[in-house]
Image (cartoon, helix red, strand yellow):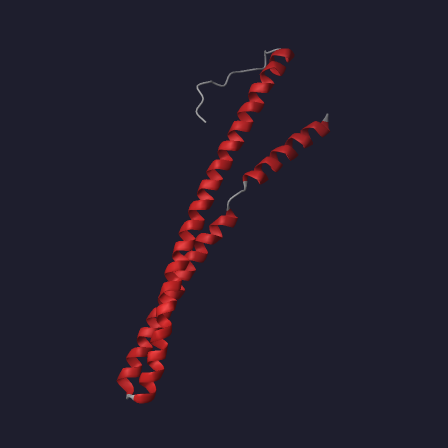
Length: 136
């Protein structure tokens, strides 16, 4: 929220002047909280989308690893060592790729819980105001 208003020393302002500025300050706070909520939703949606994409890639590699495993069993039972060994290596690579992309997706999803929710920020602000009013 860009503002051209400069901060000034308000120690000489009267009580009524300060009370008169209160609606503008509350409005600025509400606008700032709404902007913070929009930013939080945007970042959360982006991380969820990227995490879902990594999970889709992991599922793709896992899907194609199953036929390789079946090929491994067929080659292992009906042929000699080099055929099933190569099938096992391909299956291991596919499984390794699935694990790597699944971990990338999980790391992206973990970011969702690390950000502060705007609702939590509002609750914290309300608690601070309530603590200040309890002092008087």
